[in-house]
Figure: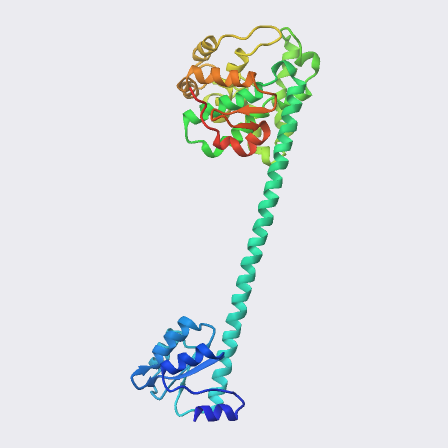
Length: 364
């Protein structure tokens, strides 16, 4: 009867006597909807509903029952039916319910298509973003490399100093521990700590002898000049604090703000030790380099006065051979190379922007 009514209403349909026959028809022919009786002899319309939802999820499904019990319809809809019909059939009600079910399935298909398109779009945008981030990273690397080259060219007698203190700083940070996620900031601050010297006159910067008081005051301005230069650059903003504070001392005798103890940023406390150590172990126009063991003794003597005790402990925990190896590697490599203990050769700027967090410990 239902087949006849639907055909007369212009809805082509086919009839199946049981669940098995219905599933066979669905596998061979394309249908838009299923209207199933709840009771079909030995089988149930709920069984057909489960099979349809499992294998033909895009089909609209209406459950027909002669039981005037809302709970039956609710149960069917919980299992995935789009609506339920009560017998005897009212063709207008059947057509209206069928139309709603078909529209719902169409909407579900549109939502699914939109979701898939959205996922593709997100994937595409993610790839574009990753490409942009890679390009930005390369741009940062190029910027750092250019700035590092400018510092080396400007202050020839101390060329290589920035590279060494970068590696020294990473070694101490590793010894202290808990700063793995911040090593990039430490590396960039160490690499660019003397960038303010670009604004210091040659007559002062390259003077072979001791500076007089006026010259010393001008030289000390390099920390603030360097800080002002990089603080407005987003990817260097965190490193700017190291540049500003790298000449602060534990007892407050440093500059420019005379910070004491824990008021000095941790990275600046680390840098104060390695900067002094490298200055003592490097040749300068007015004196020869001190032996490593002598410089280590000077660092130890400054514990609690010039240098943070915790940082000094970490400095000595690394071991003298590690400092000698870094110094030797630095002296035998070109200006823009950093040699890591695992034998990996990195360009200096790229080491800062991508490899510093993964530097292997220099072998003892």
